[in-house]
Amino acid sequence: MTITLAQARSILDAALTHARAQDAQPLAIVILDAGAHPVAFAREDGASLFRFDIARAKASGALGLGADTRVIATRAVANPAFFQSVVAVTGGQLALSPGGVIIRDSEWRLIGAVGTSGDTGDIDEACAIAGITAAGLTHGAAS
Amino acid sequence: MTITLAQARSILDAALTHARAQDAQPLAIVILDAGAHPVAFAREDGASLFRFDIARAKASGALGLGADTRVIATRAVANPAFFQSVVAVTGGQLALSPGGVIIRDSEWRLIGAVGTSGDTGDIDEACAIAGITAAGLTHGAAS
Amino acid sequence: MTITLAQARSILDAALTHARAQDAQPLAIVILDAGAHPVAFAREDGASLFRFDIARAKASGALGLGADTRVIATRAVANPAFFQSVVAVTGGQLALSPGGVIIRDSEWRLIGAVGTSGDTGDIDEACAIAGITAAGLTHGAAS
Amino acid sequence: MTITLAQARSILDAALTHARAQDAQPLAIVILDAGAHPVAFAREDGASLFRFDIARAKASGALGLGADTRVIATRAVANPAFFQSVVAVTGGQLALSPGGVIIRDSEWRLIGAVGTSGDTGDIDEACAIAGITAAGLTHGAAS
Image (cartoon, rainbow over all chains, first blue to last red; front, side, top):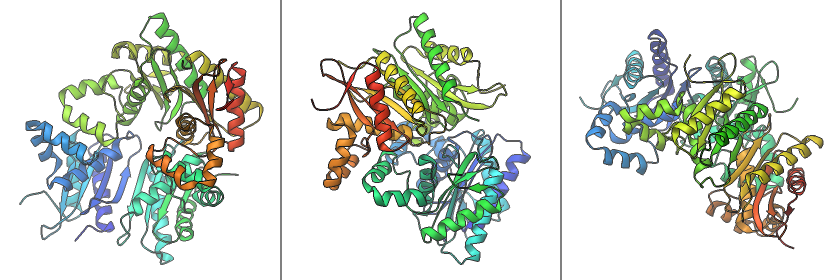
């Protein structure tokens, strides 16, 4: 099972709507499939140039370690050497900030991840979760 | 001047509509801004895994050399050593097949590029051009 | 909007003049356009070998995150794990020291960035700002 | 012995003057020192995005193999496999087209190289040579 383009675009559109309703900074939002390959992406006008790469690294990091990047970033505070080595080992596929969120279907199967970047990690993550929920899907790495 | 997200999504949607009307193979379509940074992207269900990277390398190659990849690919037949070295010099930012198309605004200013991959180069390029035209923009590297 | 070569060379020459007037250590100074591509560069005699790469990474980091590297470096003290991961995610396009300064035109549009390296971060940054100001442009990431 | 910034800028300015007198396409021109590190660079308005990387790879390729890229490109026609492997081995530090020209001082000592990109290889090389000559230096890899 992996996410469809229709699901990915639903998440993307709802996350963008949430970002504008919250008056967030300009965001980049990417949806990756279960194999960490891009399915859909948008960068809002005015978002700075690294936002695609950071958003993607949040989503791929969540998939790569099987946890939302909020959880990973917290673990990294306690064990920075290991998590920095994972960043290097994977060629930079992990960004240590909230906003990488695993997507699950109605049967709790992992089908992809969202990555967002542009505002604080908290706001980035809220936009990702709003998108997933609005699309009728579920987020989170553990039940 | 560079492309807006609204323009990029108009191109993307119209290119996808054209692809389905033509019964094309599943495509990946990316729109880059004038500095070759991603603005919008979609990969259709069933498109194989390299399609994002190839589509992006068509678009960045067109921007990088200032010509659609149809033109570049033709030149590469006559001078393969140089163009293969450009692929390596740029870290793989050039794919030598039609489907990378420069986007211009109403005043002929370069504002970005589309890259498509998934079917033949001819069909990939036709979808890119259909998207640009439907969005009220102009394509091509020379007047 | 992006910077012209004439503007970039004005910044470069004025920054070099300022550096010599201050008796700064030998500097490397690069000006990037709004898409983070090099427009003009000079490395003074005696500047060490990393200076081009560091100067470029200061300028691209400022553009990539939408803030001068003085601001970014301060944030990195509070959240080192995230910013180190951004360095890796972007393939080393961010150097965490003052001297990467965003360039704005008279209408506050972002048109590029200067990066300087060779002396302390404070002196590097002062030379970058002196160059931007002498060229009749404005610096800074927030109004 | 290596090139000074003053010499490098003399070459750069004279090469740009020659390019405009010839009505060449917009060029990127880089001068590297004897260790293949950048000393001076300019990209003319309208030059496409890869031109810095290609110009640099011409200059570094000339230094790396001890011959102007015109000579290297001719050899590559006869032995493409070897020269493509050199491109890969060096991480893309060689572009197989004229325009990478070794710079020598009055005592025939190698002090750096010029790389130019933007027009045909012949025109690129002519601009490089015009710059070296106008700066009172000598070009060429063999006496």
